[in-house]
Length: 444
Image 1 (tube, rainbow, N blue to C red):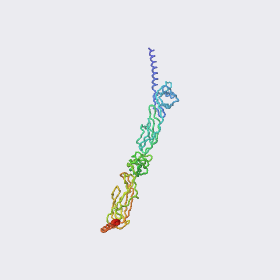
Image 2 (image 1 turned 60 degrees about the horizontal axis):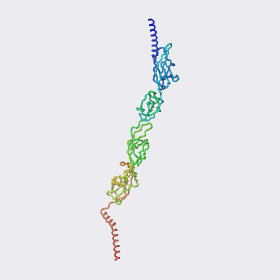
Image 3 (image 1 turned 180 degrees about the horizontal axis):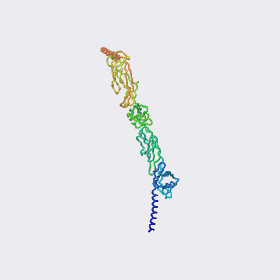
Image 4 (image 1 turned 180 degrees about the vertical axis):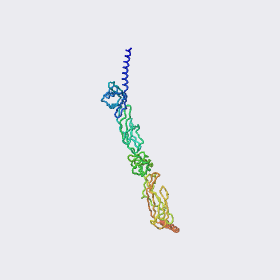
């Protein structure tokens, strides 16, 4: 019986020894941090270390699979209860941490760490589009982006390559890096500095004024610092003259103030619709303006209305073309020996095809030197329906007035005119008869 008890006691002692060793072994904990992507270092925190035990840094064993990693391939740093492993190459490792106590069994703890690769930084992002409150950079595959004002470091990353809600006219730094994956850390980042734009003008300019149009060109009245478009604002150029156009084609001309450096595009004006000419321009010359036409320049009587006809110079065939220059008579004034007599007279259109106009005047003084000065508007046609006065021209015709004869004088003048006109004809006829009779009498 005593022998049995002794055996049982020895078994229990052995069991306690083994159990105590197991408890000691399981009591030590090694908890790794996530690797620092900057240098792939891992901090292993040692916990539940029994009193009297100390971690032995040099007894730490690191294995990759079943192979022990040479001590030269990594670095170990121990500070209190934190063991730092650095410089490990990418891969998955088992780290065995050993703690020792004098006159006691060593205890160990294991943990697993995975070191990811850290890709190099992608190329600096290219600026794609900038406004007064947004920035967009070129997209990079599998990347993420961050933005900071000034020179701060990035702290918030996003999958979108576009940033909104930014300050106007402000410098920003835009960062790009490759995203973290199961096998790789987020890469190092690269960056670009971009300044948001100043705001554009709030008011659009007036619609453009056209200076000239031909069959193949349109000239816009130039404004310093402006740009011009012939396609309704799709494209703008600095030149105010468009050439190489199609005859008879319609263009939609716009203008805008050229943006300053670092400014948003300014708003465009409304369009001026222009159709290029289909024929050569008619350009009248003032030298070809006809003088005033009187019914009878020798019978400009005082005391009664005398009619005149005035002709303009206009296109006589085909449709009006942009840039046609015409002279249109509008009024005339009468002067007696250089002094204006009466009010200015307005001319009335008589025949549009012939560009003839009529008017009348009543001179006061007979046998006096008079003049009529006609005023013409110099008109530039601007397409089928538009025109602009671009100047005036005057032409003066001189004449002499006479007193209207009495009735009996008119009758006597008519008789004298009759005889003066017809007696020579009668006498000429009689002479022919006498000649004929004379010739035929000699024959008999």
